[in-house]
Image (tube, rainbow, N blue to C red; front, side, top):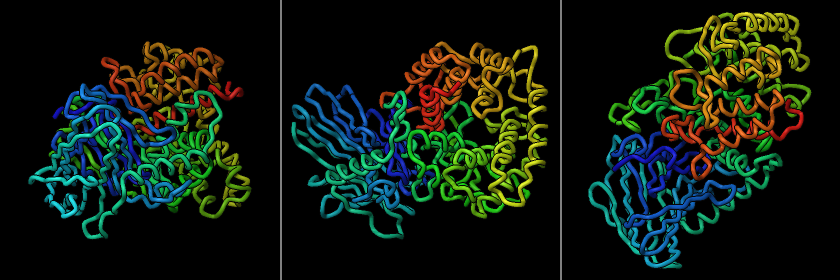
Length: 594
């Protein structure tokens, strides 16, 4: 069975975990316990790592769409025999409304087949392979027609309404016919092997209830800027990547989808990155509501804990786990034969000097909402991060792109050190007696002078990726976004022009560096923001619309776009890509963004 393209996948979520559904009707990724748990379907990483396909036997033309403002996906198959719709969702808890969405998700995947015209022959092919494909479960036919799958720590039960499902030792394969107007519901429920039994839900009622839960959630979140449809879709994706129980936002649903086909830059993105913090906060503030932002902030403060001499990790597990050490799943072939497949991410052990700047910038963004007086934990966190920057900013680190070679003096890291102290000085009146704004301001100014002196390359006419380097890096586009330099500053304007000329493409995409084979979606939206702030709104709008055209048919972005094929690359859906879209759309909306 051939692996689909990354752009072929739609995204389902119950705000506890997520699933990928291909245009071919196959669920190829689901980690039912939580986003960063082991998969029971992993075909996206290996054809033999488990799937659940539900589609016509005959070849079909496919149309897909989400129910508005939800992650309930409707796929219509047009065949020579007739047409049929399959609607897929990860079930919301019955009665969940507003911010209850995801708090007690039942871990049930619902699929409802509806005959639209003619009589269509359908096939169900169910082959779960828990623990990332390491386990082949026992399949037990039940008296009510369901099939129970058990292996290791996993229990699954598949029900098909009145259909009596039959299992062989390795899979359930069941053919059936659907007439126009006929509806057949399926539900697949997960439970830990030594916990309670899997939930039993009516799939048709549960599907309608899940739509209502998502609609009720979105009704409390208004966006009144430009490009409302893609912004609302991106906000819904961000909600779908949020682990509601803690408020953490997973960077992506998947692990190890490659940056380069056949390459080894294949990493696990199912964790929450502090580096992305202020960008995420800003996107939530624009397109969602303060509740998401403040819950994410509370998660971060708790995850960081009391600050000592150790660097604050760049990422944490979704419930604040610090040690998420990496290992390879050598039995998996990888998407597009791209190996290794990794679980965990060793970037948590890297020195990342930009982390304090992201966190303190988030406090600065929210300071009016947080009140005139910060509580003790918040004060201690900001002071601790500021002091860490004051004593470590001269050190090299691994940089925004988390390189795994040598440490360098990365421009973006130094700029975020500046941002940390700049925001800490502003916040000092709320930080109590231990705040040291005079000292922080002096070090801030020293950092700024160092960046302006060491980061500029006169020969290239641009700020480069690291001090003393001649290599362009799109991370320099972040300087105006964090207000380090005005986009109309002559050197910054030159940097924007050089990056657009040397790293940009005709499709509106921006590569991170000259040898990068793919356009990085976030960097492309950064360029849009920079052009707006430089006073070039019409050009920024045209670029924004080009980048929008790189989304898949249901509005989803992975991390990158292959420049030779136009295909999506990297983990999907990628939070930063959608965050970049929201922030760029708001920059185009805001009349004061110059």
